[in-house]
Amino acid sequence: PTWLAGGFKLGELMSYPWYRVFASVSCIVLAIGLYWVVNRTRLGMMIRAGASNRDMVRGLGIDIQHLYRIVFAGGVALAALAGMIAAPLSSVYPGMGGSVLIICFVVVVIGGIGSIRGALVASLLIGAVDTFGKALLPEAAGVLVYVLMAAILLYKPDGLFKAGRREPEQRACVAVAGERHRRVGADAEEGRVAEAHEARAAHQQFEAEGEDRPDHDLGDQVEAVGATVNG
Image (cartoon, rainbow, N blue to C red; front, side):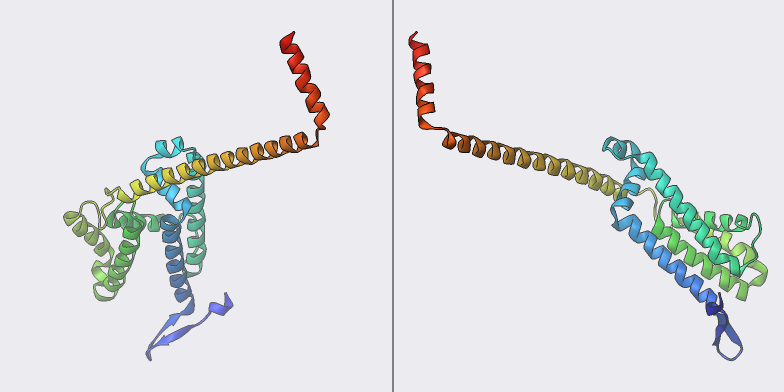
């Protein structure tokens, strides 16, 4: 776009394009938003619980297949948005994401499979290593990322943030179950309150009808009952 054309100077000999600043800020905002959705919202709580124990989530009455469709659609939308942002920076052609997929795999492995925080830290680390490698060691820049991955996996086979820890997912499962229990309890309480109101209204209506009934009718009914008993 024209409003992102040009750049700003970094010293006397270098300049940095505004569009790259826009792309960087957009990625940071998306990362923060994704972290907030997954860790701070009810949808993210159900996603984490479904990833940990989908049978229990299904037993709580949540449509796990619909939840998976939402996650898949969100992933496709993020991929499309990433392609739109990256298109002005590189040429667009079929299969342009092939090289990116390899780096994404490295990011996931280094950060720890299943860890969003690990993926964020690993992506920043890989970006720094790749950038400084191209500037300082251009002849070895193509392998520095994989050397980094091998070194990290040598000392931490599960990645920077161990994906085997299930406490957050277990807490999500417990939270989903607790929310479901509170919802059922609230519905039952509303039902009891409604029944109490209906009973009170029926009692008041019965009393009102008793007050409106003439006394001689009530006396006639008592005499008829007594005659029936004596007879």
